[in-house]
Image (cartoon, rainbow over all chains, first blue to last red; front, top):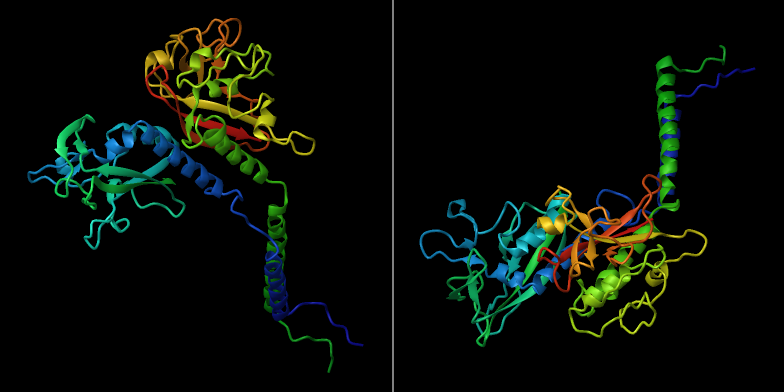
Length: 211
Length: 242
């Protein structure tokens, strides 16, 4: 009579393992991970950030702070580059990097985001008139940065708001008072895209993500 | 020739068994994690919290749904007056800053003649929360802000001055209806909900539990009609559901 000891070959062990893992993978098709599953950056967190950004933009519009922030441009006809008010000429850039803009809009942004570890970029995207016919043709592909704190993460959200600029709008100075300089294609980052009283319609984009 | 010898070395056996055992251990520890989406999670609370925050900031507390995030001063005060906490509901006659029709203590003395976007019912019903048996949800809502002047941040003069801490807001009805930080409300303080002071604390609902379960928080950035005691008018609406 043969007596065979019940011991497994290596090959048998490997095949059994493959079979087990294979059936596990098959069973994984049944499970569901939804966008609301708990994780460090779930859909819920992104929804909250987007809603808060929308609220900040709505508040800024109501206080007229958004338009002042868009027009808070320091056109320096000397050798210094044009930039937003409050940025030193030696910085050689036109946008803020250390926080919100130096005006009421910046105060609102920092109040909403800064002490919760949430970072924001602000872009101002003007309309363009590609074919020079006096009607605008949509928004520019290249936007003017107002605040740039780095490359947004994969889980960043955006809230936008349109601001309408007219031919008789003026630039604002560092104390948020209007100057007497009307905006035109030379002293402002957006061009006049319309032959009538409208100057340009810019889109302010606030990009928010968790650090 | 005996037929009892299998052509196998000890090493061959060890390899096979260890691969097999490793796989067994891995599979048995992975399977419970696979079942996790089907267990009770906070999905319901998450959806409710987000919905309630949107509803409050864009419909119920606003004067004009075309201008979301802009809270009507009187209706917000009325919303946060709870009649279930045993305290006298405060008056709100001084809150009419937008000249819509006056509300003479609608939740206090009786006749509700105003037109706020919610009904004169308990909090859970107002928000459409299911309070029936099963898995009842609780909600806690408040308006918070860190005000920027010492008189607004520390109206009692406790010595903390203008700190950088966020606190619940309170409307100090017997001092010109100014809105200040609550700063530990109580009898004899600037924010006094008892007695004849009629101050209203912008907080309603049971206190969330400390350790058990999970509390889902939603936030909205809103602004008030009129100003707070420090001249600003923006606040954060915090909705906690568990």
